[in-house]
Amino acid sequence: MERVVVGLSGGVDSSVTAHLLKEQGYEVIGLFMKNWHDDSVTISNECPWLEDSNDAMIVAEKLGIPFQVVDLSAQYKERIVDYMFDEYSKGRTPNPDVLCNREIKFDVFMDIALKLGADYVATGHYCRKSEEVIDGQTVYKLLAGKDNNKDQSYFLCQLSQEQLAKALFPIGELTKPEVREIAKEVDLITAEKKDSQGLCFIGKVRLPEFLQQKLQPKAGEIVQIPADFEQYTKSTPKFENKEAELKYLSTKFSYKKEDGKVVGKHQGAHYFTKGQRKGLAVGGTKEPLFVIETDVDENIIYAGEGKNHSGLYLNVLFVSNDELHWIREDLALNSGETLKVAARIRYRQKLDKATLHKVDEGLYVAFENKQSAIQEGQFVAWYKEDELLGSGVIS
Image (cartoon, rainbow, N blue to C red; front, side, top):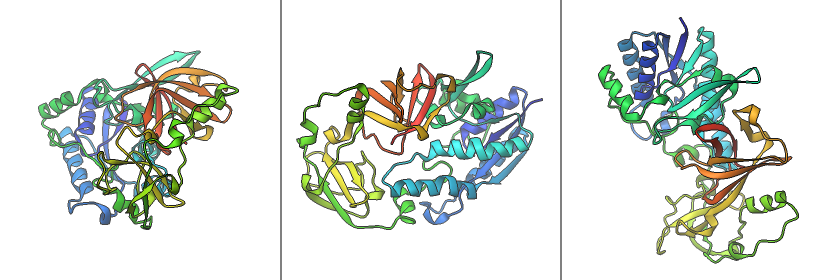
């Protein structure tokens, strides 16, 4: 009998995952990952991980499977939290959930599972896996979940063939309402439990306060850039070749304080991210102001009025070679090659048509439509139909 270790998080998705695997005849072990100790930054007095681990234990008892808690907080701090602080201090915006899957669930956690003699690790992600033999090699494919509304393949965009080989996603064929229905039928305590928000596994954290622990507040100015700023309207030059054009189109706008007017103060440019509206606290404009750029060296936030402000939009982004990742290694492009794909730069976004252009230094992703708030540090992921082929960190 094959053994599967399920990451039981105390939520409905992982509870039903464990139940389905048991039904399918696997020997199932439930493990709860404890990743956070520091209660000083959680918002309320409720201690989310205690409540969650308790729910996970009750589910395991109900299903009659062994259960234990593993403490991964040291690795989580080092690989996720420290990385986040470092990225924010550079003015980049990391995605902790993508990292958590790559570094914690499918690395540290997977190692523990394999030491327990597991054949597979299963999670409650809404995505699917398939395999195909290509040139005598088994190739694993990561596919979008059946529930369009909940597809979570984006969060797994950094997985490798080795990790996918050992992964199972039992609820990927179901929709969220179906999962809740199964939980009710089996009488699981988590059937009606709300989906968790907040950082992967930390629970309810206020991001600015969380960041303020490490990143000191530093008063600076908010500068509003007018809608007719010259860089937005200048004509595009002629290019010697496609690469020169892509480089030009992926270069973000640069601002100086003199380009706009000072409209307010802030407590630290490193707390803000492109596209952000909340927290600027500047009144007196017809439409709300959005962050269009942060300058962490000069500690200036540049803002523009309205969500259609030209400063928010670009068509092309770049991923350097060392941050480029192919799940389908067999489809990786060589320099000079292109590939038509559908891509997204954030989890909740609809897929948009794009073309990949591989160059010596990395990969350009050229979208057909302008993209709002392309933010360095986030992940771009590209698909062919419903298969996620690869991803990279936006540079």
